[in-house]
Image (tube, rainbow, N blue to C red):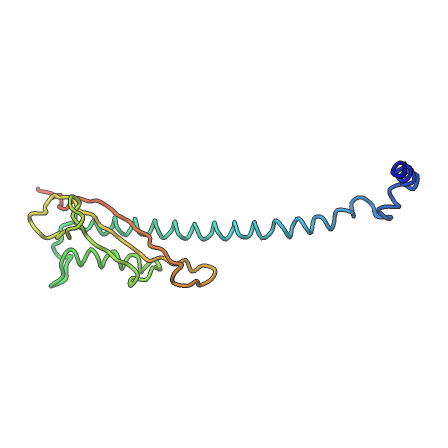
Length: 175
């Protein structure tokens, strides 16, 4: 009974008694600010995460390219490409590290190993005549620490890896 009397009294007064004299468009201003305060941090976090992921994918792509370019060296005629006393394996490792360093990845953070494809525990010698036309693997590992927005502790880094299988030997062109 009391509830119905209160409802009829409010109906006679109209909505201005409850909401004041504000037009309906002004009544939502506070709600929009609250919605923005809730949604904006989520959108910013998603945007920053996408930027970080893009940087990681870019670094992974650089590793794949460096491994491919290093392994391609094994198919070339090495005459005139090696410095005195330099081995094909050390040239491959140096070329991969130089490529990555020229793209902003510190060469000291890069590990490059050349392994036998059939037995990955054995190092593969590119110059050994017994390894002619055999498959080998180039492994490139980088301790990657995204440094886009803020430096984090070293415990926050992770290793990006790339492995490429190639055949040792070169195609010769005869005249």
